[in-house]
Length: 331
Image (cartoon, rainbow, N blue to C red):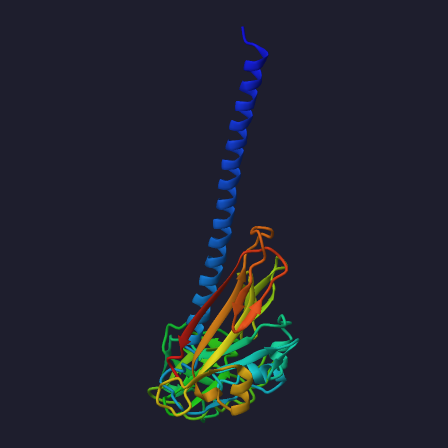
């Protein structure tokens, strides 16, 4: 038979085996959870940088137009639209300062309720696709005609904000409607936002092109799950959440002071504004502070250096700092 001693030894050995298996399972599960959280964090960061880098690279692109002013016939009905559609400033930024920003936020940005402590970036450009203006060019008795003949087919739609350019001059206007496949109309007045103040775009004939233009604002705000996220708003369309877990964004602007194509210094938005250097921005250096979705995942809170600042969070989430520098090809 089996004695009490043998039974006790078997129980002890069994308990040790179970404890060992439990430890292996727990360690494996924690390693999986940690790796999964890190993978999601890095994925969010890569996607955020993909979108930011793509928009930054094309900032200032307006077709063949270079180093000439852009005329706008959009109605100056409010400060929001005046700021959004200022295409003579392809790059603008706002530096987080305490609970506010420097320079002060215009209504077009403050109305988005961005989170304090993170910089805000505004980028403006035209789409790479262009539609040719074709004969008879302006359909009407004068240059003041509201109708413009373009090549067909095209994907322009009513309410699109577009740029017409012949490489010498450029004008921004809003399409009010289309006629058939080859006429775009830009009536003045009306209920569309912002609408046009006049139908007179100037003389644009053979060799002119029409393309969409976009003013995009990147900022940090609470996301759908309550956690901070990177948002994007283009023109006057509703803002969209791009990447979850982006806690902070800091931006430095590469300044080419003498026009030789080489960045002389990286400066924050407050210095760029004070020195009037927005026209000299040749690159942007973007830093993101990302956090994982799970709390109590690491033994102690991480201490990180983020843009020359020591970050000491009060929780035990996994965090990571990612930085990239993007050249503005069209500057």
